[in-house]
Amino acid sequence: MRVAVVAGPEAGHAVPALALCRKLVAAGDDPVFFSAGRWLDVARDQGIEARKLGGLAPREFDDDADSGAKLHARAAHVSTALLPDMRAVAPDLVVSDVITVGGGMAAERLGIPWVELSPHPLYLPSKGLPPIGSGLAAGTGVRGRVRDAILRAMTAPALRKGTTQRGEARASVGLPFDDPGPAARMIATLPALEVPRPDWPSDAHLVGPLVWEPADNVLEPPPGDGPLLVLAPSTASTGADGMLDTAIRALDGLGVRLLVTLFETPDIDLPDWVRAGFGRQDAMLSGASALICGAGHGVLAKGLLAGVPLVTVPGGGDQWEVANRVARQGSGVLLRPLTVDALRDGVRRVLDDPAFTAAARRAAAGAADVADPVTICHAAAT
Image 1 (cartoon, helix red, strand yellow):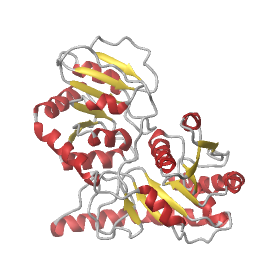
Image 2: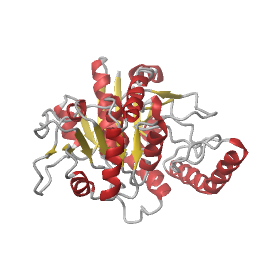
Image 3: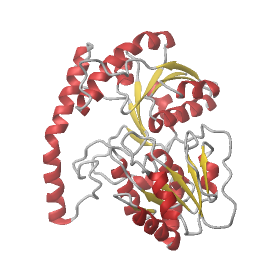
């Protein structure tokens, strides 16, 4: 089966899409990866056909301050840029990242079935939850349900505006105003990070985190026998800044060792108990006592899959939502704002209380209870 997999160049979206491509190859399918930036060469190094995803750059009249316009109007433009390559590829199925909406639009314009890939929990609004992004647990009792209803009413105008913007974008490229949606939705997260909702979509399937290692080398930990911590500063544009410098100051004197996973080695002098660079994150986490991260779903899921407790320092976007779910599940602590004292105390809490590790291991065990993404793709294409 020929499958076009479309994702933007942000690591949190490109990496899961590439992980899906690898699963498709292993199943005997023929994926073509549409993205941009460094991930095209990464895909080709893996033997996966890759093509540049056009239309991503802002145009003169684009209003990127308006998230709805950025998501939907840009998607219509991306879908048009995609059409020639998509026709040439002639896929049986398109898999489109949840925020790279142009992939789904292009599929619909060509009459090809498509599947939406969410590389994080399901973020569709629900009549039984507070607004996604609030970080709040579902309210209980009369007061809790009233609180959630009020919050949903407050966000409803923005949701209606987004629906209108999507419809207008669709109409601008000849599609019906009303969006019929994908043939299926793949939710690539751990069951432990999902929350019960009374209106779970019948087409949504929990497939577990789609993770893989773009690096081949193993970054050796610093010498010694102190607890090994892994630091993964956020790669997202909305992530918290200054994590490496703060971590070095916070952890100095605690008797720990620190591995820092970065695409490039930092241009600063590191103490002898710190190593930093690009390497296999699974190898780093295999011997770790805790993971400090920005609550981006990708590395956070890797930590939980390894049964490693977390200290999360969420930035904006969905990081706040995910970090709160981790804290409620018991596998980590949430810090905001990031300060030296707060990070030192958070690390001590996680290292000193075995309940955090136990909760992380429960989350890892739950990853076995998920659907197979390749099977979902095959079903959607028929």
